[in-house]
Image 1 (spheres, rainbow over the protein chains, first blue to last red):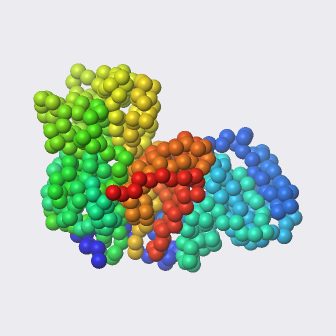
Image 2 (cartoon, chains in turn brown, orange, cyan):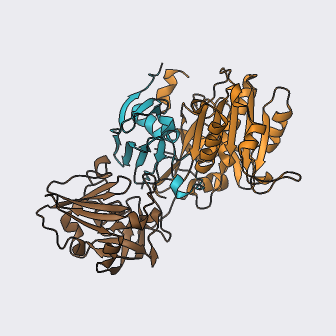
Image 3 (cartoon, rainbow over the protein chains, first blue to last red):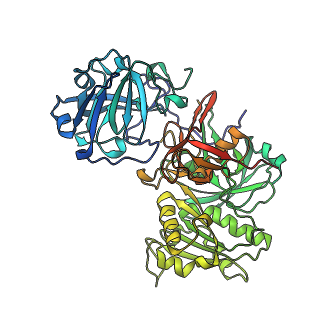
Length: 199
Length: 250
Length: 104
């Protein structure tokens, strides 16, 4: 049994009922990075959606901005236990991006500049639950928070909201991504506290 | 260090704070007593774990500041705004309080007193801590290894161990110590960052083939190692220890 | 409640975000716990560019859900370490080989 360190209170974060289990509230916006931050100029940026047959849709920055834009206010929950409430974003709904895609695939892998990947069932991205966001708090999304554009899937832990997004690949078979292959939960629902393998 | 000690290092040991020395307005040295401590080499670090009454724990690594000395392990901690561990260690901790430590750790950023090659130490801010352990180990071993220390600090008040290093610098056979001030310099000296001219004036030339130990914040280490390589130092003789942002909880 | 954040050389947060890495040195404690020997002096060969270096000199990104070890030459992911309450997951697939001196 470890000795208690007298005078060390720790974080003393009381569980707040509006937060998922094990989370605490932050007011700032912590930056996590698993590697060098890509700096992608918008005029070099592109987003592709690739179906399981290899059929591909492609948008450059202007074409992407010509799509219907949505403003959303959502709560963020990071698996490292911080949550940030009421964040404001603008972007394109995945329902819009995937509307013209012919697919029978059930899974999606998101690909980022820099090589990051994350996976989720296609259904998690539809029904007005996910966006590709390019604006945060009325400002262009900064590189450290995933700009030019990031995936935003706020009902899952934040590692699913891939920063520096450049591609979505539809796959018939589930293909676990960067953290999902290294010990983190394949689904990552914060309300069910699906942090690690086996949770 | 014997293999027998190695397995012992896997365990967390209870450490008791015995004394404190104020180093600057925001940094102090803590002497911990760690029964069964297997000894360490200068440059090594320890993991320090704090446990709150509710079971919450927080772990950070700190460079060891002193030469190996029985069961005593010194660390120097600068308080960082919002730092839950450094705030406790640099502030609330009192003599008799207990933490856990694991170590000594790291076999790369270490200096062995029996190594005869000249040693160039370059530190930024609290990056001086593992370097002063090398200076102290050299003195304790009575080694004559050529050793020089160049340390960059914001202002004279931010200099760790300044009185001790002033004595070391004037001691016969002692380590030559040079301070570089980035923001506020003492009268008669201009503030500025370490550049190639400073390195040429205050450090061993590449022809002396020194082993270089560089420790500080990541941008500092990047800049110094690049300058050293440009001056002609062998990259294979440069050992670096960067410290940067805190982890997971961010 | 236990915090499973990786260890840190200091609390200092002076580095810019793009410099959000430290050296492999910082993983000495975690690697010792896993391998029961000092792995920071082990020599690894990058599976991306073939560069050979001690793990102490690799780049460590730990301000993340897990610890990511990258090649200092080409940034290739050498390894990942994730700590869960009841296990640690180690993936060193990005290293072509590791050569470590056995303890005496």
